[in-house]
Length: 505
Image (cartoon, rainbow, N blue to C red; front, side, top):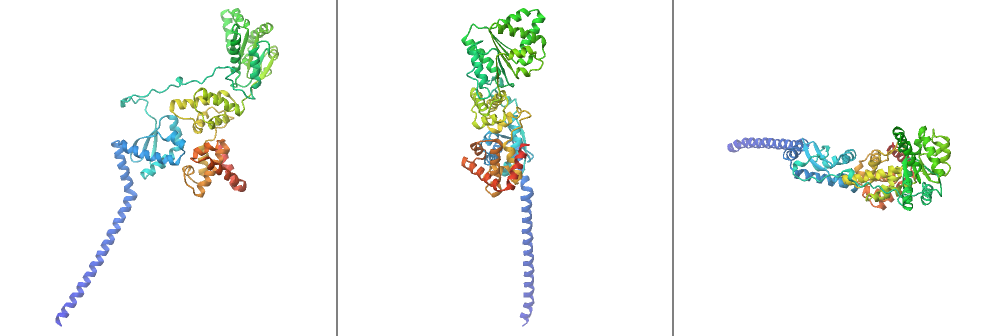
């Protein structure tokens, strides 16, 4: 009895002590788990990005581990390839190089030239940032540079850069065979051929007029070439009005007026360009009047070119104006679309430049007034290709011709501008529109983009498909669907109209 009395209180005491220990141990484990979880979250949110950046910084900024740079750059390029068109990737992104990663924040990218740099920084910087974030796990800033001019220190032999002066000029001989005919110049062309075939027997004088850059000089030279071929003994004098005036001034100063007169009044054929510059020059008009009379009375051929009809040349003596109208007057007007396309393709052919049809049509559609502008645009595209390796495409062409356009011709709308405006309207990313996402909002934005590109730029279905890495049938379906939806939905029609207005401003 005493034993049981003594043991019982001791057992109870032990039990209580065991319970207190278990409770304290539970609380201890619970607190420990809490702190482990808290530290884990702290590490993931705050410390891991810094640590990761520090690792990359140690590799790139200090040791210059080029393998690490190239690995990250390759992964970023793959992202860009999946979120842009193949043409965009090849032209602008494929050869970008990563050269440094400083302070875990700024990646410096090397782009092959300033022209490409301006395009990449304006249009594709956001895509590149997204690409690096997907690879690194955190946001970075981008800095763009071009290669240094002097790389001789690396011990590698540098390939000599082509000089623009060494490029093929693409200049064709000014002959009738090389003259691109169309409804706008057909009459002047036929008249020039008739004069060349029968000097003084057809039309004398022949007065050709039209705005600058439409082929008047070409026809005068073609007449000269043809007459020389058929009549090698003929004395043919070709001169522009400015040179004629300067020669008169020189003759008066040097007392060689008689020699000057003999030069022009003994010509069998006189071809004079830019006659409108006679206006206001009384002495020059006087001399040309007598030269004209001498040649015409002797049955010699006279061909005159001007930027306007004789009756519209101010300060031109009436006696000269009437003489210019004695023969045949032929005008040259700006070429139509088909003729412009033919001129562009001919120029590209002479330069051995592979010019896609959609690019040729794009140039012809935006440069409408001047053949020299058409030829200049093609020559500029050829320079980009020869000097920088940039193949002709719509994006490059837009940049190439923007400085050529005059005030009456607005800068053409670019695909990127349309893409960005549609993306803003639909509250989606431009990369999503180009990408593979198929949710309703992105798909609607993609169809709207394709429709507006077709309406505003006139690009072919095939070209639009290439921009979005879709086949022709997909583009056709998207545009047809959008046309049907717009015809039924007034709100959608108004939205489309607003987007078009915005991209055109």
